[in-house]
Image (cartoon, rainbow over all chains, first blue to last red; front, side, top):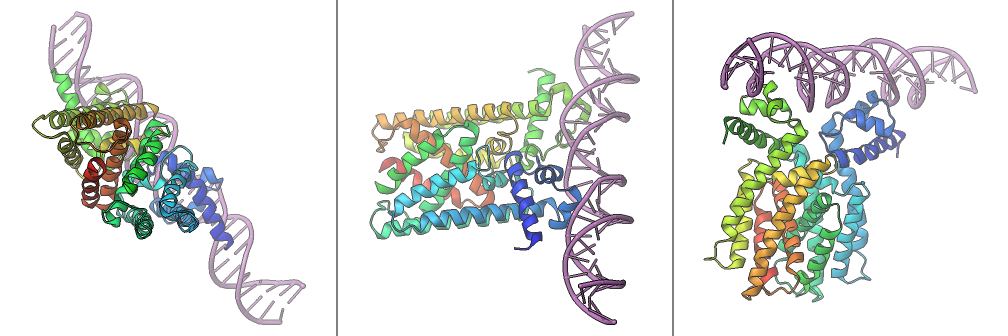
Length: 193
Length: 193
DNA sequence: ATTTATCAGACGACTGGTCATATATTGTAA
DNA sequence: TTACAATATATGACCAGTCGTCTGATAAAT
């Protein structure tokens, strides 16, 4: 990885931390460069605009999450439904690492979908990816007989992903893990009965 | 209602339409007064700050929604679970009326929970209210035997409310009703089997 | 005449973005 | 290896415009 790319990534990582808590419009270019301790002029060497930065940030977060999710979902030593539970549990901790609960992707979705079509499309693509991963594991669970629910896996996956995003949002408002507990208790009931 | 209160409400209604699509930080005082065709100087006659406006806006939206929800949930001519389905369907249309999909409360939650404690607490309270309404109807369904699921009603209500908020969010990213359809198909399965 | 409500415009701070200049880095030729 | 030009990167002062908020003059009501 070139020196340039390293610095770009450093700027991204620092900026994501700020933007994940203060939101897109709540974060200025100045905030981002301050967080990375980089002069303001340098920002536009790496990103052509603030929107461009946000999209790159979304891509970086997505990449991290997808890698982490794959590690959990492909562990064939664990039963599919157990893997799905782990997938969600790990997804939550991934969000908390950006300090102050909340999913960066979900936040950007709510704040920017109506303002920036480019951001909306990127968010949509990332949500589709995640949903597809859930669908795949559900198919696997169906094959081994552990998934009792007879609804189409795609439908169930979409429902579960959305429910989970809603759970993350509620955690943010409540500043509590209770919503997560409710989700994890209902999840197996929905799938195995 | 006094002339003053009428004008205040008018300013609120106009401002909510803008803030619901552009977000809190994406909406300026100028945007709000322009939407209501009121001079900028007047804004601070009615609201002591932008945050104060947002909280009043949240209260107005909540009041509308709660009234609409009560109408649906208290209609004893309809079976409880059917009422719950209607409750969610109507909740979606309530959000779309603020143009461009998405729940004003959910949007404010994601954008502002980490920035404004006052807004976060208001959002939390509103979510609790809604969840309580769901819990009540679930209890009713349990009494008449139509709710098969044996999980505590409070838990189920929390899960359902969060799933529904997630569904609204996904609709915003996807610009589609598919997430709603998935929700409405899974809902009865979760409750009655 | 006195109080109260309204509002135009000004305030300083800050916005996303640009640009001329300064500094590194690289490629080439001797 | 050195010398030097050519190119790329780094930078902070600066732009025009906007931000949320406030004040002082005016209008309306009493």
